[in-house]
Each structure stands twice: as structure tokens, then as C-alpha cells.
Length: 253
Length: 280
Image (cartoon, rainbow over all chains, first blue to last red):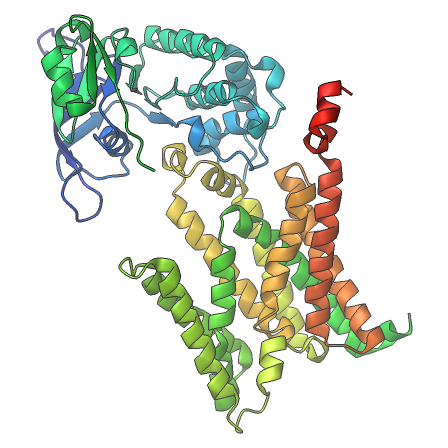
């Protein structure tokens, strides 16, 4: 019981992780990093680089082929709204309430406290007026904020956000950025998958993936020309003297 | 109406109201989960089971159940045939099973006849059919009520569903099991070809009009029952085939709903560009 005083235990610890879809070769290998309470981590990599695979492994949907994932508390996933079903008849409040489903017994109604929590969460992302509005009728940025509100209701220790700023208007971007900073201040761990290298500099750590872990560390030391070239290969365009970089994504549909 | 005084028609009426309502509500989830093709495949490919039961002289309900089970397994295997493509594999499997059923049914030993199996025999509804339909309706109503949130979650956001406490694979499996039950309970009355109409048309109609999930489910049940009653009455009055008449009534209600749904939409979507420019 008298353990020596040391750094507080990590909220999220990934060691030697490899994950694969079915019996095929691992889509992601050799990922090792630890995140402490209040840290936001940008996850960089090109399409197919392993960002989604990492998230699915952290959510427990892909069991590790090798290595371990240890998470203290629950994990929430905030998907890209571009993939949402817009034809499904649910309101913004319905979607926020989904964050309480895991703790609601199947034969009960969602608890009054959780309903209040869902309304407060929508209020917090600036959508107090749109509670009853149909999810599919909201703008892309508003939909993304509803999905963030759902994660707030979930009250997760670790949040995985898939491109939360993709296709989002400036007002929504500000609102989401403010919420993410608040969540950090509350001691939650955020993993933010992004294509935006400039934005990645804003967060506490950067994790670069290209089928395996290329680098992990504070942005200033991690986002070097060498690391970016290793992460994006030919897709990277370096501007100025190499201090600014843009990743060119080739969407193959 | 004179015709409603016959015991035959009264039983048929109760049967079709129960089946129409149960299939209508279940259909809403089938369409939201994009499983209409599965519904059609399962309904058609179970024909050999029905025919074999008729040949062996065992209850057709048992044959239907066995047919659905074997079909479900075959379709599950076919859907994994990634080299051929799952849709093609399922289509080939279903066609093979249906063809086999038709060949068997055309043998002179089959007492019921192919027509009865393909188009059903609603006017032949007996007490056991009513009990089966009633049980089905209760099971579907309970399952849809108990699983409402999980179903909504899996339709809306299958990727995030596991992190919100729901496994999409298990929910989809449960829906397919309900579908199999519905087909088994309804196939003797509505027939192998037409049970599909009550699973899809009322749900599609309700989804064109109703703005909330609960409204869609209730409306689909009402439209399913209404199409059944309308089809049955028309077929009795005009002396035409019952199953076909019900299927046509269901489709007619869908067309009506599509028109109402279009009229409901805000005018701006149907406004011409010139009117829009005038700002009227």
C-alpha cells in the first residue's frame, strides 16, 4: 500500500498494439503511447493510415492481435457527421439522449435526470433553441455539435473524435473548440483524428500513424519535416521553409 | 355489409388485421435497417419447405418454419461469398430454392397445389392460424417496444452503437429472427409471394408521411391493417383473388401516402426557380 510517490497513473495506456480486421494482416502495428488526464492528442495520418483502426481498437471492437489497451473509465466515440443518417426521424434531443442509453435498463424510460442532462448538454454546445429540431434538418456544424453533446451525456473519461471539424462552419468550429478545451480542463482525455496539421499544433500531443506509429510527442518536437514526410509520404506539401505543411488527401471513391 | 356476416370472412378479417398491423410495424424497422431484400429473399426461398410439408402430410406451419430456418442458413452462407459478390450469391440461392419449390409443387401428389402456397388462402383461416397470428403480434409488439432504443441506435449510428452499449450484429440478428417469425405466421394466409407486400408497402407509406419514429410505427400498423381490410372486402365484392387484392390495396395506399407526403413538404422544394427569384 505504500507505493512511492510518482506521476499519476495514465488514463489511457496503449502498449505494443497491433490490430487487424478478421484474419488479414494487421492494419495497424506497434502503437505505444500513454495519455494523462486533461491531455488532448491529435491523431494524424493519411486515409487508410490507421486512425479508424486505432479508434476501433480503443473502443474494443477490434481485439488486439498483440499488445494491450488499458483505459480507466468509459470511452465515447464522436463520429463524423458526414456519415450520419439524415433521413432517420430523430430530434437533436433524441440523439443527445442516446448518450444515456447504456445506463438505461431496457424496460425503463430514460431517467428524468438524464433528460435534464441531455438538454443541458445541448445548451452547452449552443443548441438550446434547436432541442426539438429534426437532426437531419440541422446544418453540418450543428449536427456535429449534437454528436458532441451526446458524448457529454455519456460522461466518458476518454473521447475519440473523428474529424470533428470537417465540413463545419466557423461558428460551430468555435463552439466545438471551446467545449474540447473545457473537457480537457475537466481532466478528460481527447483523441482527435484530423487532417489539419496546423490545428494539430494546438493540442498537447501528436500521434502520427502510417500503418504503424511514426511518432508521438509534443507538437513542437514531433511535427518535423522528416516525421511529416514519413507520415504522409508523397501526399505532403511543405510550405515556406518547412515550418508549415499541408497534407493533400486523395479521396478515392 | 352483407359479406361480413359470413364466419369465413369474419375470421379472415381478424387474421388480416392482426397480420397487417404486425407486419406493418416490423416493416418500418426492416426498411430503416435496409433489409427489404432480406425480407423478400427469406419469403420466397422458403417455398420448398412448404411444399415438402404438404407432400409429407405434416402441418404446413412446421414446413414453413423449417423452410425459413434452412433458407436463413443458406442465405447467410451465400452472403459471405465475397468472390461472387453477396447480392449475386443470395439471388442465385433464392432463385434455386424457389425453382426447386415450384418443381416439387407441380408434382401431382401435392394436395394443396402451387397456387395455394404462392398466393395463400386467407379465406381458409382456421383457429390455429388465428392463434399463430395473435401470438406473432404479441411477440412483435413486445420485442419492438423492448428494443426500441437499441433499434434506433443501430439504425442511426451503427459505428458508435457499441460504445453506447448496443451490438449492431445482435440487433440485426434479432430483427431477422422476428422477420422469420412473421413470414412463418403469415405465409399460409398471404402466400409465399404476397407476404412481402405487407412487410414493405405499409411501412414505406408510413415513412412518407409520419415525422416521428413512433408515428411511423403506429401509422404503418394502421395502414397494414387497413390495406388488409380494404383488399379483403374488395376481393369479396368483386370476386377476385384475395392475396392479390390485398397487395394491390397496400400499394395503392403507398401511392396515396407518397402524394400526401409530397403535398406536406414545404412549398419551397416544389417552387419553380422563377417564383423563387421573385421571392414569392
